[in-house]
Image 1 (cartoon, rainbow, N blue to C red):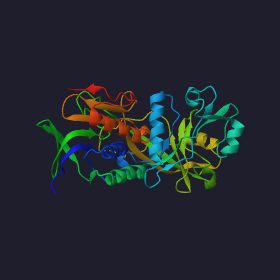
Image 2: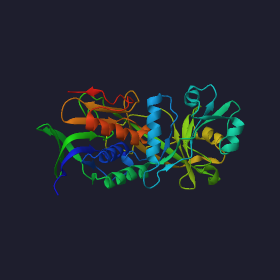
Image 3: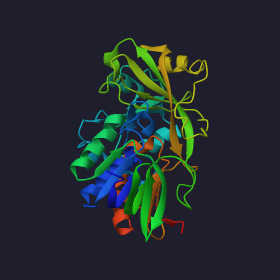
Image 4: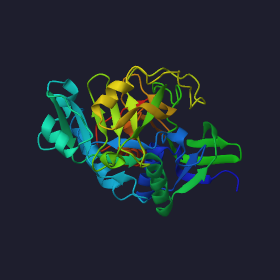
Length: 366
């Protein structure tokens, strides 16, 4: 078969956001095809690092909270069980702005140092520190999440083409023409979810690519670091870091939160790690986690996309063919993906969105 023929909508890029959009379109009865340059669920498609935190308690307003509640509902039904409902933590001093921002009445519970240590014994809290539990949070298996969404989309009638690179997008008689090495796909509308690049659509700000370094450390008693006993979360005090439970029964993942250098080549998804990367902060983190080794067992880099405002973008172009561009969500994309997919499907079908989050109904370009 040459190309993928003619469809109502083509989705370019099947990372987690593209996969969720393809599923929502298929469920809405739109004839659609997804085109992925690699294999679905590959690390360079946003699935690097194995796991992601899921939260429902965020400080960005009720529209985002509603989207997260909807995403949680949808994640629980994805095949392959990529979502583990173990809660999510924010640890820090009571007066820390990030701690206060997520301590939402009726949605989270604040534990003092002693109560937190009794419930999550791997954590060593200072006397002035608290742990804020988001019971709606949990852990996502990144690769399984993306593969599960695509599997659902196939069952709902979507076409999926892997290892197909879109070389360019043109127009013909008001429709989009996607050029690939083996032909053309013609579509009434397009969703561009490639996750990186500058000027993907006129009027849409470019998405910066930045290097993320993840570190894995051995633990003395893996049972203390299983998801139920050690939910994923963030410690806000210096050295600020996110922490993830063990999924291999031997190590935990730590992401030291520090400025992320820009990566200028979209093809460079595994930039090197400088020698001694963990030297200045690993001892301090290990002092907060009972039984964690201060020597890394593994280091891994990958690239995440960010807008300059550090907010994900869902943008609808003016005119025909209708084009929706989304990206720049960084790791946040895994939290929002299923609900954002539904917003994208609304935009493709009607040009309007049910939610003002991410300003998705704003027309840009010409």
